[in-house]
Image (cartoon, rainbow, N blue to C red):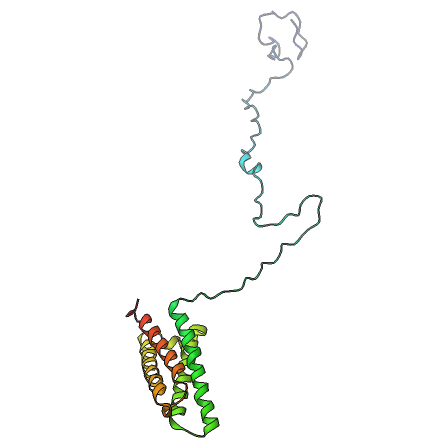
Length: 204
């Protein structure tokens, strides 16, 4: 065995160091420093991918209109306007009829004033019939105008007008000098009286 450091020959095979220079015969020429333990390189760890989010479909907009394939875009048709029909019950029907009769009775009395001159009973009866007729028609056609008088007050006023006009019309039927159109005023006043009793729940 030969030392590569100093060149000495014939060294025993089992010798660990050179007897001349003391070099290590296992690694001739130099002594390796003690090797440090090196950890094997760690594998690159990727952060866990959120596959749930990756494969989620984007949210679709609700209510979007998609034109048919191969056709032209047709805008949605505008909504049709349907006329509003007011439904009326028995009481409102009686009020409408009574209001028209009272309005006609008022015009009759006013026409007598124009033809025969001033006459107090015809003037008073015409004014009462006109006010009561407009009130009866207004309660059905424009109820928001009389909203402040809703309740027992309007019912009491209706009963008062209906009773007075029914009685006055009945008197005019037999005594023409107390006004005109007694039968018309009587029908209008009686209908107004019945409508008031229905509203108050006396008649069912």
